[in-house]
Image (cartoon, rainbow, N blue to C red; front, side, top):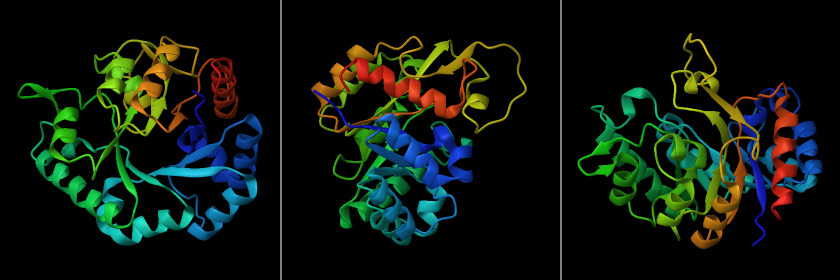
Length: 270
């Protein structure tokens, strides 16, 4: 099966901030079919919609912080509907909202509420995992508990294959576990092992640490088995695969990194 391929714009956030239209045009030239937003870079939703239409990129989804969704749930959903997004994803949880913290149950209920609002408007809510959801609550991972608590009609998965691996699970098997509930899968590659510098590398938590025990890589340039991962996506009924690389490596720029990823996926028939 040949999948349409998108890129998460967080991967090229500085370029997008400086020149969104030019960045989108280059992404299209690389052979990407769509984009997933992480912010709108100062543009109005209608401007983003036109930009994507003119360039020929599908705005498949958007990562929208949970606090933004809670502050104006209906208005935020409407904004991304106007752009043309079919999906909205909760991308990350602040530490106080995570499994094992007092706010975790509230987080789950808030995600359920947002999922209901999305369903009312014909949009699918997704949850994009990291590794911190792979802690046990009772006999199951917190990530599984979330998906078992909030029904599939209100919340689907956006499994990040890097963080599934770092969390201790085999990505292809975990994708298959959520067959029929995995419309978008994040392809992210890495080398090394779980370490303190992981979150500093994705630009969210700043820690002063030494060493390079963990390094993000373009798709196909790390340790992930993407042949089997993409096979699992076929089995699971995935609609889109999305390239994400939070920080460049190998002395490449962000744009060079996502181009390497796109070219690698072409060798796999995508």
